Image (cartoon, rainbow, N blue to C red; front, side):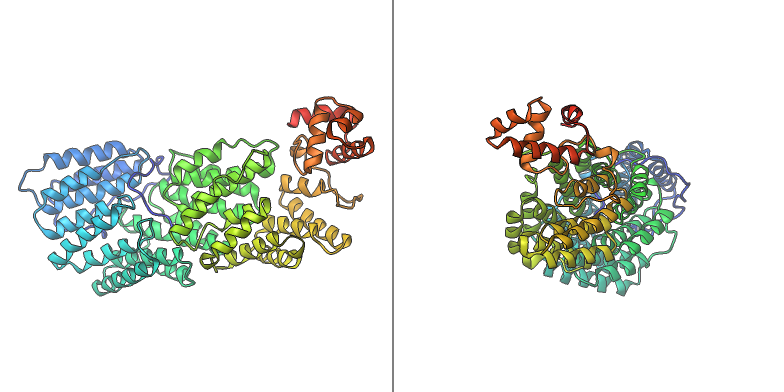
Length: 574
């Protein structure tokens, strides 16, 4: 799902580079004749916002509006309201400017000014209230004969949100808005409406979405004023975001790097760094992914913090024996405006829960998928089903059937669907899993490909084929230092041992449950409590020979440790 810029956003750290403060009215503004005495105040508030001092900047704007005489220009109030929303989007504190904007709308006399303030208020509203506010704005713009205002209001109505409007209706409205914007030849209006329509197409998984994001991102000048740059950065970000979701990682990385260079202030620079981290994680460069994610988190909490937390959580799961789940839990509060990232965070958190053997590790996934189905979203939720297919194939089979009409048809979506189909077929899924693994390898998404190769090995037609696939998975995991996934294959009891196999990575040697079967976990638990083989056999109602074999396999999966150290290691790793 493309990202919306919320009113109640997050505070940014001081920008790494100085950005130009507007010396004239913003291209995006509906205010054209701002009073000379107000201009320096607006420039001061904008400069404060770009420095990260968003609360004082908003206080300055609110105080300035309160001090305006009753006969002040409508454009003065419009300019103050517009900048208040942009500064809020740069901020970190949950600042409710809705009453302020509603108040300004009652103080202006012209329908064009009321339309501008209602449009601004609608962009910052909740999903449930936004359509009604925007319809009010549209009526005012029509009364004023303002084609530009009508265009961007229709564009905002097109944007995907949970408000009950159908996808086809959104596309129709978005095309109407873009056609009106092109009539005006206004670059900001065209960029705004083109981006909104591209967002709707992304939500519907239309193949033209990527091309239209490119068009939307390239409409505006390379260095517009900071207020207008908000939509320029948003379009660039969503272009990269959509390319990432489609599995077009080369394009996503390039667009994110360009966006980071052009961004006004560190808020957008950090968001682009977060996209880079996502791309690096998916393509198997875990060291670079962690570095980019840490850079994206270097500042006050905002959306980039949550995106980066997903990457750090995923990298920690591969690299650490007992990764701390807190970073993922904290991330959820920062990505509530972006369903695609929220669903990805839930998928990664479910894999953490599986690794920790929590009860009901998939418990959040059905509700998230139900939300996606209710919104008729065709993009961004497929990883939830992939995690489910690995852990609960029957449940995944039901989702595959119920959401078949919504399944994304972009390259990565097709690869995920093949993977899910292969996993739910069980012993009949070998060929489909191999095809899915090859598609992921081609994206490239090597760690996902390796997991599918390992799954395909488990249902291979013969032992030789299975071990060949396991060795291919080992090579991928070893190349990309994916310790947990590598340990899982090395501890596969069907793997034929050989001198050329790597050792279980050090980070995973004390992880008691990694790669163990249900029975082996039971044996491991009893061994950690000091039970002998005979006592384990009695406790589990198995023969002493079977108990000894399980103990030997568990020892082997922990690198062949001596029996006297096994209980200690299992106790430490529990």
